[in-house]
Image 1 (cartoon, rainbow, N blue to C red):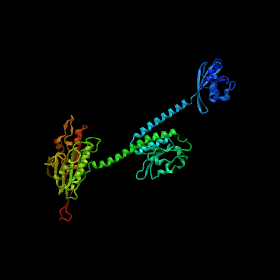
Image 2 (cartoon, rainbow, N blue to C red):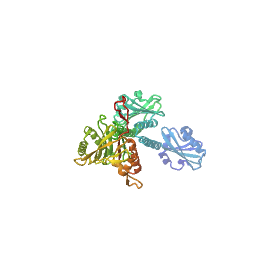
Image 3 (tube, rainbow, N blue to C red):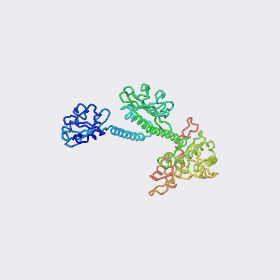
Image 4 (cartoon, rainbow, N blue to C red):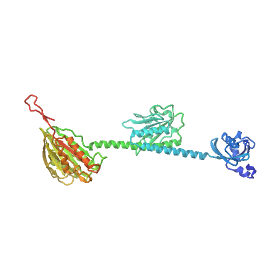
Amino acid sequence: MNPLNTGSTTLWNQAPCPALVADTAGGIIALNQAAATLFPGAGPGDCLQDTAPTWLIDAHVHLSGGVGVTVGGLTSVRGRLGDRDFLAHATRADDEVVWWLFDDTERRQAEQTLREERERTALLADASSALLSSLNLDRCMEVTARTASTHLADAAVIIAPAGARRHPVTYCHRGGPVTHVRLDIDPAVMPGLSEALQGFPPVPSRWIDPCEVPPWAIPDGFTGPVGSVSVAPLPGHGVPAGAIVLLRDGRAAAFSESEELFARLFAARAGAALSAARMYAEQADITATLMRELLPPTLRRVHGVEYAGGYRASVQTDRVGGDFYDVHPGGSDDQETLAVLGDVCGKGLEAAVLTGKIRNTLQALLPLAQDHAHVLQLLNDALLTSHHTRFATLVLASVRREETAVRLRLTSAGHPAPLVVRADGTVAAAATRGSLVGVLPEVNTQTATVELRPGETCLLFSDGITEARGGPLGDHLFGEARLRRALAGCAGMPAQAVVERVQMLASDWVGTGRHDDMALLAVTAPRTTRLSAVDGRTRGRFTT
């Protein structure tokens, strides 16, 4: 078994990997040149116990004792010698054991690097999923701080760009809670923070003196002095999303170059999520502000007259569309209140934008509201000179309380005529008609005057009600005749009850089918009671 007995002494000595031969008692029989270099001072006749590392001695003892090994069998063992890792293969024959040692350091390091990269990749994937699962800005900052303090450092601090001269700051230390505060801070006192908030590349951790970390940058509950600091920017969509400060206490190892690189990768994912959440919050705020101007108003009793409105957009997820209604109260009881219901061609957001323009234009024309024809002509001119190619139909109703009655002047511009519900259940259409606005240079209209007695209602409605398709087969129109029958049963009801009744019937008729925007506006003369004169002579007031 001894290689020296095989006539291959030259090859044995020139073998690139260390090799030695030892007997079962642990005595060294032979070493090649590589083994002699690895074990300086060892030579034939020396004892393995005096020259070899413990892990190799233990393996030799077990192998020589025949533990789990048969003659001619092969065994392997791993161990460290100095700063190198070795893999030792052994074969035993008779009373001799040959050990071949292979330097396994590079492979072990590659395996370790691969394992770390897989863990980091998995962490980035999990962090991205958690960050993108919510567009809430505070939630994203919380996930960023908690993930960083758990996997990257002992504590993490997220500093967002200043708003109203104060920076939103999120703290988290490992195992502790996440806290959100707003601080008036000077980023320049924290090394690397001012640059990070401006989106510049991070300052290397080794350049930052932990003693220079200001108290506000250390979370409550962080134990021990700061031993290492890393500051990285949070890149956003075009503008920086903030910065992240990672802290390790004095007992932990300083940030390595690879750890700082990984922190930058994590910061890039977090910055993108934070930027998206901030952009969503800004857009939601803008949408809410604009939506308040587009949503139908909440109606109430004005100057002794009841008003009620109802609206249902064509798309369930939309809150606005092409139908609208408004009520503009007069300055006093003896001045007319202008009520408007209209329908813009089309549906969705584009129709809602034109709806907003029409509503604003009509509000600007309120001083001219006594002349419906003039108002409609001016509105028509405004639509013809705009970039919109859509048209609109609408009804103007000037309303005024006169004793117990309510007098209306109604003008339709291409819109279905309002229906009047009398106290006895009779339903009739107002005698008004006209051409639509936004198409022809001239608008021709006819105004009708209607008087409502107590308990009677005038209903303005869009064609989304009468043209709603439904029924048993889903292809029949709700129609004006069905609407008239529904209104006949609403005689004497308050305005809100009339609107809710018609809305319920139309919605039941449509079911889950598609429909156009639906809008309703009811004007009702309330039931009144005359109060007795206080002094017995003066005429009493009417009250509701």
